[in-house]
Image (cartoon, rainbow, N blue to C red; front, side, top):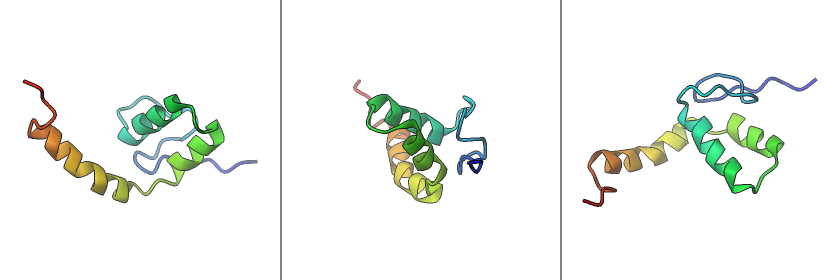
Length: 73
């Protein structure tokens, strides 16, 4: 029997993760759409993600978005 893996960002199950606004889940879906990994590998990447490190890297991008740096007007 396999261990139930939980999302380290929102604590929901990785398998059949609900659509609840979890950014990590959304990013895993982007990786899934690229088609380079098996479903098991995607679940492993999701469950073992260091979310503190992820948010540390994503934070400046969110700051740039907030500051309008991606706007093209």
